[in-house]
Image 1 (spheres, one colour):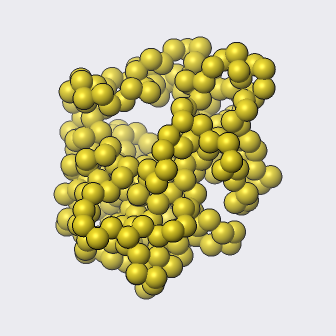
Image 2 (cartoon, rainbow, N blue to C red):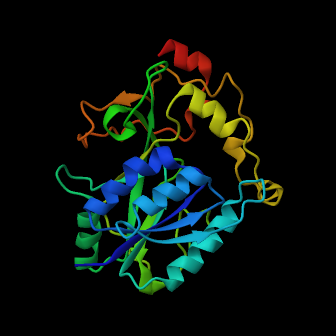
Image 3 (spheres, rainbow, N blue to C red):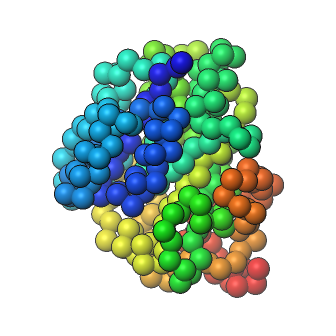
Length: 271
């Protein structure tokens, strides 16, 4: 069986990890945590999942600002220490799957490996909660989504570790290196960006980004948050609904190049 490890950078993400970690453990996918000075609740969660699936907890000091570059460099050091066949650049608020019903992420990686591909690419489907409705299990309860695709083949998120590909140059999205062979099937990546209106405000209104990264033109779509544009839209031409959480019937024919907080609110009201 292929050995696979997901490397996840987190800062106080207990609400996400309590759902994500058992999903990865059930697929025999190991997890290496990169902890950005999380609190006591997170430390207790790491202890609870120690060994299965968490095999290591690595630390990155939090300097008061979100720095994607620091996280990617720290993750690369972890990839280089691992001995697994494949690694995954994973975020806490994501769940990656196989495109076909009844199959999982491990199967997608094993199929690509058997066919001599060394990279898996993913399509990003952003799930939104319903305004005013509390969420206990985001994976099973959230069904409204939009297909976020600013450009094709942008999420090279799983790869053969021994190829030593580099994802620090493109914000953790596209890999750089020699002999990249991307599997022809794009698999779904479910992105649970916010879990409620209140969560959206807490997550984004107080977030500060690295000024050095802003000067490089990064984080542009996350620099103008307001209470108004973070409100969860109830309808939009880009929003669709799965019949149930196990469905893989994603609409790919109506992609959006922007996230919901950038949408024209008049268009949303007219949907």
